[in-house]
Structure formats: structure tokens, C-alpha cells
Image (cartoon, rainbow, N blue to C red; front, side, top):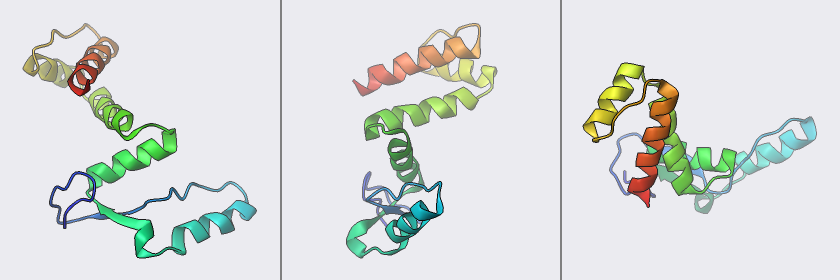
Length: 117
């Protein structure tokens, strides 16, 4: 199956609700949420690869553009890396690493934003 965003072939697709289902905090909201989740047609869903589905979900939850969510996802992965792995990746892309993980995140964020400009 092809992802409906990036067109990459994937063996395991994930179903995305095109209209964000949101969440609920009260029982009154629960009924509305359940209807948005279950009372759908084929026009209300699309098949995405795991990576695109994660980016779409992040963009909806944090009210970001898809591009900003894509950047944020890369930063989240980078932030979780060990300091040594961060330094190695920065070296691979031709950037000098900082002394701390926080400095490296700033360096990497600037690089990612330059690449997406």
C-alpha cells in the first residue's frame, strides 16, 4: 500500500482520520468524540505510513503545520539520543558539536531548518 502523503510503499499502513477526532475530558464530550471516531465514511479516512501518521497526529495535537511537525519530530528523536550519538550525527553532517546535549539540539535544529528552507 502507498502512503497517501509521501507515496512510499509500506507493508503496514495506519488509518488516519482526516478530520481530527480530538479528545474528551467529560462524559458529554465523550459521546461527540466517539461519533467523530466511529461514524465515518471512506472519505473521512486515509492510509498513511507510520512516520507520516505520527507527524500528522503531532501537527493536530500541537496545532502545527505539517512542515513544522516534521521538523519537531526530527528534533524529538535527536533530543533522545545519547550525547555521543548526537556528536556523531553532527559530525556526519559537517557540524561541530557543542559541549552539552542542549547545545547540540540548537545546532541540529538550525541545520534542520536550513535544510527545509
